[in-house]
Structure formats: C-alpha cells, structure tokens
Amino acid sequence: MKIIVDAMGGDYAPEAVIEGSILAVNEYDTQVVLVGDEAKIKTLLKKGKYAGNRISIYPSQEVIEMSESAATSVRRKRNSSIVVGLNLVKEGFGDAFFSAGNTGAVVCAAILGLGMLPGIERAGIAIITPTLKGISLIIDVGANINAKPIQLFQYGIMADVYFRYILNKPNPSVGILNIGEEESKGTEVIKETRELLEKSKLNFIGNVEGKDLFSGKSDIILCDGFVGNVALKVTESVAETMQAFLKKHLLSNPFSKIGLVFLKSSFQRFKKEMDYAEYGGAPLLGVNGVVIIGHGRSNARAIKNAIRVAKEEVERKFNEKILEAISSRE
View 1: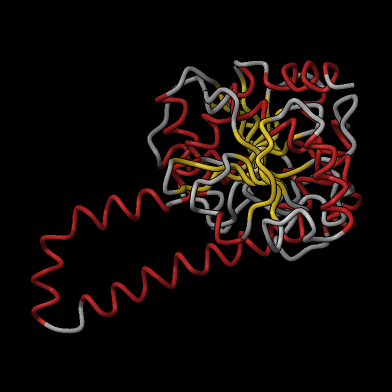
View 2 (view 1 turned 180 degrees about the vertical axis):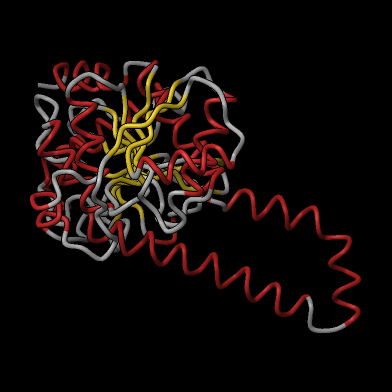
C-alpha cells in the first residue's frame, strides 16, 4: 500500500504533514510518498528522527496556494505538489492521494487527471460529522455548487456505499437537506431528487432540515456543494464560538474554576468528539481513484487519520463497490 501525500498543502505544512506521515507509517501497514520541496522534507524527516524505509520523497518545485484560483493554478502549475501527486496515482505509482491544500485545486486536478468513475456525472466531497446518535455523512460540501437531481441521487448511492463498506453500517438512512420536512417544500431540483430517491432501493426517509444536521435523524444528508459548504462553515464557527464562550465563562471567577476541575474530563471528551482531526480527511467521491481532502488547518493527528482513511478505501475496494451499486440501479 502506497499513499501519495501532498507535503506542501495546508496551513501548517510541511511540518504537520510530515509529522502526521511519520505517525501513520509507524502505526499502519502502509508506505507514504511525500511530494514537495525535497530539501525541506529531508530536513523535517531528520528533525522528526525518522530513519525507516516507509517514507520516500518525490520532488516538485511549485505549490498551489490557498488563495489561488483552482482551475487557473492547476493549468499553470503543472509541477505543483497537488498536480504531480495526482499524476503519480494516475500512473499507478501510488494507490491513493491526500492533500490538505487548496480544496478547489485538488478537486479540479483530480477530475482532470483521474477522470470520473463510469456512470458518475459529478464528484462530491463527503464529510463525517458527530451527531447525538453517532455520526452522519454530508455530501456535497463544496465540489459541485449547481448539482442536478441525478447528481444528487448519485451522491446518495456513493454515500450509501461509503457507509456500508467504510463506516460499517448496513442500510443507512438517507435524507435530503431542505427548508422543511413537507414534500411540497424546496426547489424543483430538490423535488425531482426526492422522486428519484423514493423510487430507488436506498433507505430514503425524506427531507431533513438544518436542525437535523447533528440530531442523528439521518445517517446520510444530501445537498449541493453551495448549501453544504455554507453548512460546514457555520458548523465550524458555532463549534469554535461555543468553546470560546465556555472557556470565557468558566474562567470568569474562582468558583467556576473550581467546578471546571471536576468537569475537565467531560470537556475533554466533548472536544474530542467535535474535533475534525478524529475523522481524518473528507473523501472526494466519484473520481476514478482514491482522493482524500484534509481540512486546511489539519494537524499531525488529522494527517495521520486521513492516511488511515485513504488506506481503508483502497483495501476495501471502495470504488469497485460504487461501480457495482451504480450498475445495479441502471
């Protein structure tokens, strides 16, 4: 197993990426190929006291910055760590690709370089979120902002396969994010998607509202990339604000500080459950290869878990399962 990793992608790259890669190869039975500035990577591997043979380096001279236009940067920076890394997967040099860099550039380069799985029209980014009943999978959170009904339906099929074979839950429930539970609510795209889902073999439970994102009402929540990305960013903001408020008020007086001592373990569990680093990266579903996208602020633990997720997708032949599911519904 060989995972291609963009060493230069992310707010804390390359330090966090290399630290996370070392953690991953020490914990999992896999190899990592770090793509990026060879001199910097070698220095950081030495600093991390890594002397094994499970990490190798593939040099690239360019980096696509977070602020750059996705399509333009992919075309102009063909020697960037993102483009080079995905080409290595395309050429069979690696089994999967991970980057915490420019999300749009990863999506664009993956579609152009790897192509789409037969029968899939558009790629979608899926994220795992904690709920009151376990976890949910939301797709799409940014790859396709103008999804058509058939594309949303295909997201449902791919997410169903992901839940069954990666998250190990048979017959997951599927809901579509809407402004109300009633069938009459929503845009024409939502209504047409609902019709496709109702006629399918998926465990479709109907519309779900924004308040259901964390209730656990539905295992899978479908939406277009515009709505999904807004929901994701609002969620991150609320989580960060909540933690800031709790810290502010619990440290406001001596009595609160005393109470905090007794609640410390509970708050640590809460923080861990809400931490994106626990779930690894977000799979880009629909492309003809395994691609995992990390949060821009991914730390070493998030990098390690993202490599684990990539490894699991490859081992369980995830894309083959998608093809089987698509063909059985044609």
